[in-house]
Image 1: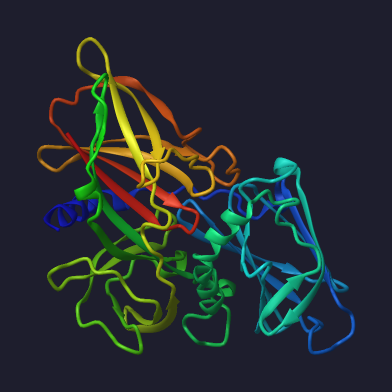
Image 2: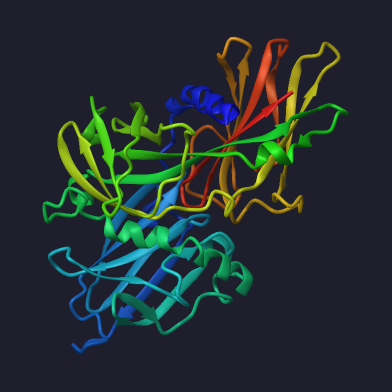
Amino acid sequence: MRIIILIILVALIFTTCKKDQGNHNGNNTKNAVLIKGKILGLKSSNSLSDAKKIYVVTITDGQLFSHFVDIINGSFTDTTVMGISTSLIFLDGNYKYIGTLSNRGLNFLPLNNLSNGINTTIDLSTLTLVGTNVIPSHDPFGNEIIITDQELNGLKDIDGFFESLAKNIDADNDGILDALNNKQLFLKSRFYISPGHWGINNTAPIVDESDANYIGYSLELYGDTPFGIPNSIVLSGPADSPYPDINTYFINSNGHGGFHAGMWRSTPPALYAFKKGTYTLKIDGNSYTMDFSNTDAKLNLINVIPTMQTNSDGKFVSFTLAYKLPNNTTVLPDDIITNVMIQLVDNSGNQYYTSPKLVNPNDQSTVGDVVRGMYSYTLATPMDISALKSLTVVYDDILGNSYFLNWVK
């Protein structure tokens, strides 16, 4: 447990990393994934005749992005990018919630592996309403969206996460969607893990099973630009059985004029997981209510295993990454990880190197200082690592949850 707490203290250094905000609404994209559908024209108990708009939510680069699409004459068309997960939430003309797209029990579309790549068209055809589930007459799974039944069943384990997003569209409870005021809040998980020892040159990395079993948990909250950087954030909950030990341990800029903050449970032994439920936030005294769906850290856990390469002078020149499940099975990261980077910390606890983000090559949403391909990177200039104490691999999964894997010598 002491190791996990140390990782968090070191990770505080990492929280000011700027995220690049790409074009997540593909309406201005030359090559984009097209999503379209239509609703039944006659009002009935299983139609969407009152639906006038679609609130499209995507998780990219560890952050939440959204936009609105109009339903015109019973039909809609939207463009998005490949490599992200997309949820479609249907609203009436007053932006009131009607339902969420649900296909085979999954409340989002995983757009990682598509039949025609970035030029794929997904025609959901006729949509009907069953409860709050919006059901398409055309099933894109196994057709336009290439996915196996096993992968689909695995994604259902995280489906509650997107269900919570649909409930959080008016967190300040003023009757106006937060996105209309550009005041969205996004609550996600952050995990801290000690997997073992990094590799260097011909010395292979070692995954230490005993360390890998220790996982630290915290929550991370993102707020849009109008929030600025709050002076105070207090989280309480869940409503049915509130924790007595939730503390805010950082509030930083998110790089876009808003903020991101971290909360953890501090009573020893620290770093307990947070239960699913409804939580209350006080941001500079203003109240917000958010639904949180916890995710098992091991569900999307991949041991991203680093090996460093040095030159004849012993200076760090490049690194490679291997991806394995906790059972040591090699796995492709494309369907789980959206971006990954490494950060080096010296004996004094100072972060002195951060690599560019290595991104999923299918992810067309991330722009800026990134490297496409997630297996290796060569530094522009060799670097002295004589004072290197720890190497942290940081990655975001498809839900935006952040994993901090702290590797030691």
